[in-house]
Image (cartoon, rainbow, N blue to C red; front, side, top):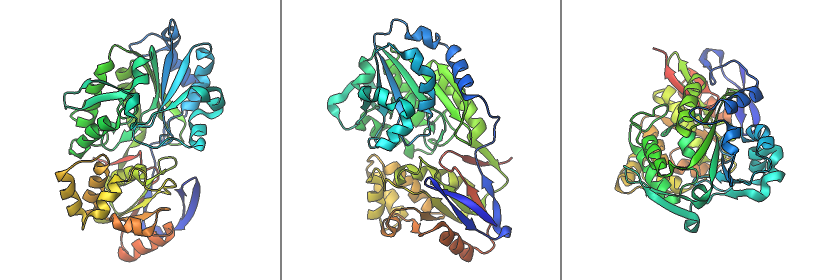
Length: 414
């Protein structure tokens, strides 16, 4: 049989024996809705908050916090609705990069759409390493120092535009993540992400998740700030399925319920070969694409083959995890090194090393074969070549395809 597999912005046709095909796993199909109508309804009926128009009244200045190009957040569609409402107000945007690099011109076009030229002069790109732009607000219960970009502290009012999807150690993206890691300092993000090493930090879990709870606790440092949150949930076709607005916490948790409907997918059984596709733009680099490994492993039998498909045009991304893995003799050695000292990015190394202990990780990317080999990922030059080899190694195995593995969380049907 023939299948079309996404690789970057293109699709590659591959062939596998019918008998070995276990299925294509996408986010759950939900009813298509009128995107503008959903956004308008959410703006007019916010949760635990005044309406958006009422929120704008008497605002001295408004800071919009928006996601960078590694997220599928439909910021431009939201701005289509907001542009006439915010006309005449003093506004500014900050792109919540966390520790990611600054967005490219193409990514800025993706984020702002037709509004880019109108807003370009008031767009600030967060840089977590610029201490001179940061303000210290306090310490969370876990000891995380809450140091954030001063724009988020000095603004009279804040509007957050985000999207909510599963996240492999924060439970879900969205909401509180606009501040931490979004506009937080490198030091703050490093302290928070160290908690990702704990077993209770995992996808779909908020209660008892130390990363999420640390974020929630830390954001209390700005609880007096007037914030209007706009959270979106996309469907499998990247169209807006739901929107929730108003109070930051209330809108986030309401969006989590909708997100679960789309991205938590039941499967009949695990497979011996799982293909995890990191779709554009979540394939920007290996640092981001690693999320596909984390979700794909949930559908893989012990001793199986996990094949990562991710173009990674931006290379490795934040390099510390790859540096650690490439310095290790084997996955166990990498984990021992992490136990001795945590550096931001080591949580990625730990997750890859953990999987490599019980399964084989293979990869089709644009990265060098030597690099992949050094971090315990067997490289292949094409998807077809990798699948042919997997079938040779496991001729009786079923092959399961996770077509949006970065945000799809498979779970066995009970």
